[in-house]
Structure formats: C-alpha cells, structure tokens
Image (cartoon, rainbow, N blue to C red):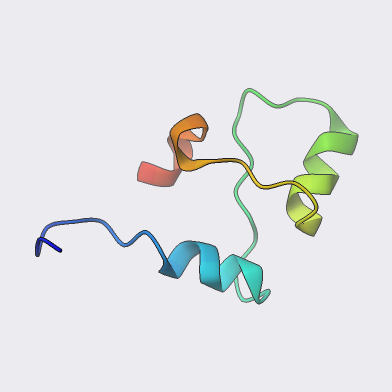
Length: 54
C-alpha cells in the first residue's frame, strides 16, 4: 500500500465496533433509512458516500 493511500479499513472498523458513528451520505433524506444505516443494518459502499473522503 502506498504511503499516501487513505485508510480504508480503520473507519469501517471503528464504526462497526461503535467507537465512531457511521456516516450517512447527504443525499439520503429518509429518516428510517438513516436510522438503519446508523444502526448498522445497511452498509453504504464507499463509492456512493462522498463524505468518506473528507
């Protein structure tokens, strides 16, 4: 892995064990869907979540 490569495992791992909150893309507005993503029932792939790069 390149030195400048962004971490791809750590954010998902931390969210999975409850240390950090899962990120929800801004284009998702349904409160029930947001709650399911935050609870970990639905996983959004990184290519659909532009906030992951921030």
